[in-house]
Figure 1 (cartoon, rainbow, N blue to C red):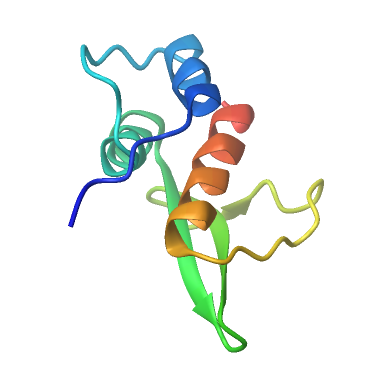
Figure 2 (tube, rainbow, N blue to C red):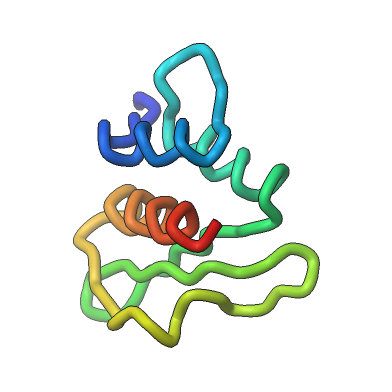
Length: 93
C-alpha cells in the first residue's frame, strides 16, 4: 500500500495557503495540516451505490461549511473524494 500524493493543482493551492512542508505532500499530510492549522476537517463518506462524497466541518464547532455554493458531487474512490474535499477546503481559506 502506498500513500496517495496530491495533484499538482492541489500542491500549488496548498503552497499559496501557507503549507510549507519541504517534501511533495501526500493527501493524509495535507488533510492533517488543514485540521491542525486551519480548523477544517474533510470528512469522506461511503454511500450506497458504490460512490463517495465529502463534507467539510469546522473544528471544534463541527459546523458544515462550503455547502451552499457547491453541488453535491459523487466520486468513484475515497482518494478522489478526499482530494476534492482538500481543494474545496483550501478555496474556503
